[in-house]
Length: 261
Image 1 (cartoon, rainbow, N blue to C red):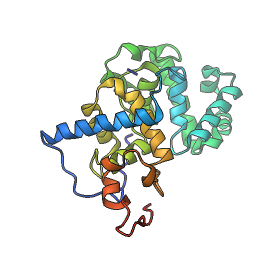
Image 2 (image 1 turned 90 degrees about the vertical axis):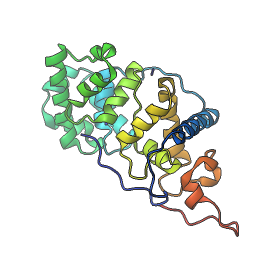
Image 3 (image 1 turned 180 degrees about the vertical axis):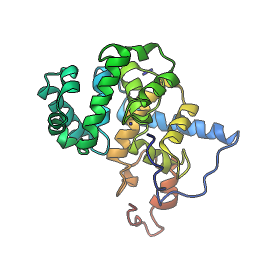
Image 4 (image 1 turned 120 degrees about the vertical axis):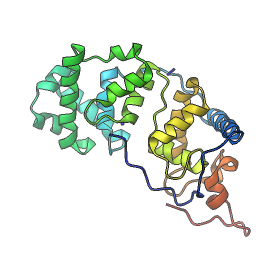
């Protein structure tokens, strides 16, 4: 099936602590909870069909652009980059950095991202003989992840996105929405790193769930389990959620608690 590692985030203040690694049979209960979360999200949002949205190299460049910005700005920067150089990655590689920076300015951090894009394209040209990542299709997942992480500005999330979205490889990307929802649900410790979140879901559920679960957790994080003012009263995972149990539940007088950042 079918973005160096980000710093460990501060724990969500609404989460209970401490969280301990589950023992058997607790792990089986956590697995059952994971399946129920997946089932309810499918029921609420449907099951997205896997299909490549971009060519692998396009996806790589887009995910480099997506660092520390929103999807709208990263996509706009990507489209402007493609339009400015007629979709020719060789022209991008050999262009003056100032021209690349101007094309991707809307994505932010353009002074850092422009040389990373050029370095990635140069690496592809030297190691793959062109602007292609098709060799990843036949690599073991861990080897493919390691190869992608050898590119400048590419971390584990970026690598996982390229493999899952372009090749249907069994790896589970973790962005801020996936991380926040997983922590609030109590699926991982409050201080869990993105890599820990990834490893937990991969250990609990089979590869065919990774693509729909990833997308549905993101949607749930954007629409319901928001970073600020989460809509606990409308959440289909309310009874499964540590956040709701400790902070989100209404008080005895029926009033909801003040929102937690």
